[in-house]
Length: 360
Image (cartoon, rainbow, N blue to C red; front, side, top):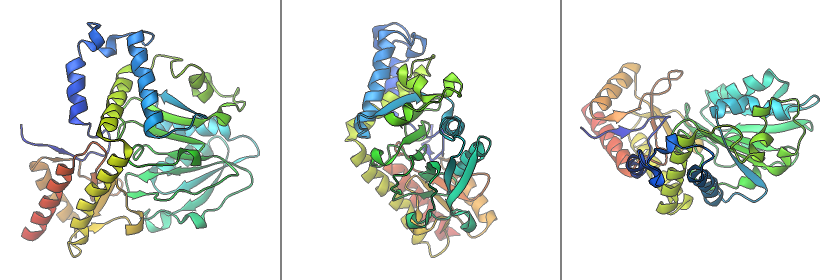
C-alpha cells in the first residue's frame, strides 16, 4: 500500500500508535475475552476507562476543581441547541460572535429559542479574520457570549479570547481543543466534538462550570440538561463506549509525548511549514485567511484559477494526499494539520506544493 498523508478536516487522522494499541486490544480488552465495545458500561473494566479519560482531560487542560467534565453524544451541533435551551431565558439575550459557518449554525438554533444579538462578525470580509476583541459589543442582559475558537472552513482562529465578567463566555472548540494551552477559567462552558483532535466521532466533551449546573433548567428535557449528566458522571444512559475508549487512548498518547506544551510547539511547526510554502510562492498560492488570524489547524488556500485548483488536487490525490479539497461552500484547498498529523506529512505537502509550482 502506498503512503497516505491524511489532511481530512474531520473525521480526521488518528495517531498510528493509538490505532495499533486499539487493534491489539480489539478482541480481548483487559483480559476480559471481549472487546471494549462488548462490555457493559456498568462494568468495572469499562468504568476504569471512563474515569481515566475524564482524569486525563482534567490534567492535560489544567481544568479547575469547580468545573465538571462531561462525555456526551450528539456532536457540537446538539450543543448549539442545548446551550440556549438551558440558559437563554425570557428577558435575556444570547450574544454570538460570528466568524464562520459553525457560529452561524449555532445562532440559528438560538434564534428558535429566544432573543439573539450579534456582538461581532467578520462576515463582511468573507470570514477572512477574527474580530478585534476591543470591537466586540455586549449587553447588560446577555445570557452568555458564544464564540467558535477555530473555523475549519475559512482557516481562522482566535489567538486571544475576550475577557468578560457580566456573562459566561462559551466556546465551541471542536477543531482546536487540546492543540494549545488555554485558560479554562476564562470560560463558563467549553464544548468540542472529538473527531478532530480528541478521537473518533461519537463522543462530545463539555467542560461546564459548577455555577451553571445550579441554574433551574426544569423546563428542559432531561437528556438535554447538563446537570443530568454531571450528576451521573456521564453514565445516565449508555455512553459511546468505544469512542470514549479511543478518546482515552489519544489522551494517553498526548501525555506520553509531553502534554499540550509539546503538542502546541509541534502544531506551530507544522503550520509554519505549509504557510511558508504559500508565502514564498509569489502569489501562486494565496491564503484565504488574513495573516494575523491564521489557524494552526486548518490552512486554506487557492491557486490562480479554479482549473488550477482542480488540477492540483487531482495530482495530490494520485500521490497519496487525502482530504485537501476545500469545503464545498468555499472551494479551493485546505490542509487540516490536527494533532495527529505528523510533521513528515506537512513536509511532504510543502515539497509537493513547491514542485507543482515549479512545473506550472
